[in-house]
Length: 363
Ligand code: NAD
Ligand code: DAU
Image (cartoon, rainbow, N blue to C red; front, side, top):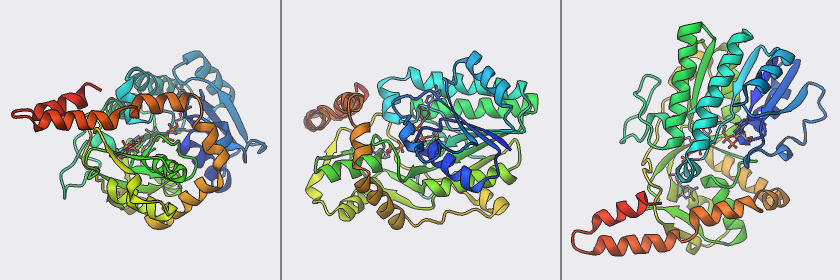
């Protein structure tokens, strides 16, 4: 098998490359990545000497570069991770999400069609189903109802990928995973941000009331699920991949403070994310029924391993949190706590509840 991975310098892609080199019989593994702020070749330091592995520095929106890589590498299967993956960044600056997630996916689908790949795994997210009231759980036939630019762009790319199966017979499979966590995750997402802030003893910013619920999936469980889909998923199908571990954000942050032995006083409520989804919930019953896969890592074990990894990789955190990260942090979090107080003051005035929503929308 000749594998082409996109976004392999990111969090899940790099974990999948390390996993694939030891668990999948591949004669070749090409990693196509443009190295955005989220791409980090340090994540792959352990695999660069492997003769099966090659890094190709390219933007998936660059049709000519992608065509050249496909022509040279002749991949049998594509596993497409590359994306602008962060909701908050898609709110601050929507265009990159549309470019990479929609146009970049289109460029790859076209190349895969021209080169007759035998599997195209499109890595997507449970966010495409939108926010679900308890006790609802989305199966793969649940309507798509994305809330953010990020999730709307992922829903668009899911539908585009499936249209290539229906229209051209391209052997596409879409996977939709819940929130991943684990080593090497960029500290803009909830768990690595809270761990790295806790380790530094700086405030942990909780959006709104912190009662939002996410379903946590250890990243290696996600990689095993993708392997199962690559081996025996049915083309033209969608598979949900959930961690079966739904927790409110406040509970996740409490546990991080416990594992890092830091005080609860570090928790700081800040202005909510605009359009913030309250609850994600998916059923992975189809994947389990068809492949036998189920999540194996218990949340407390996965969290303890993850905290230990961040404690042992101080230099990695320092490097990714320098420069542009600080600018992003200032932009997204700057005076967010004060904005919450101002919005609450406006809401407390007679007829003022709309002020709160306005403050969130104006970010
Ligand atoms: P990430 O942000 O850590 O990594 C994204 C990678 O894609 C980076 O290496 C980046 O350099 C690369 N990339 C971005 N734009 C590119 C472009 N135009 N051309 C080439 N490379 C580009 O993301 P992640 O958290 O590892 O997520 C990977 C995939 O999994 C995404 O498609 C995301 O939507 C999906 N997903 C993520 C989660 C999660 O919790 N992180 C959950 C479900 C699904
Ligand atoms: O559900 C899958 C999705 O999970 C993936 O598709 C996305 O790529 C990934 O980023 C993630 O999206 P979320 O928005 O759920 O993840 P994030 O880690 O950004 O936030 C998780 C929850 O924590 C969410 O309710 C917002 C909240 N949060 C997040 C940050 C960064 C905070 O309260 N404070 C924060 O500083």
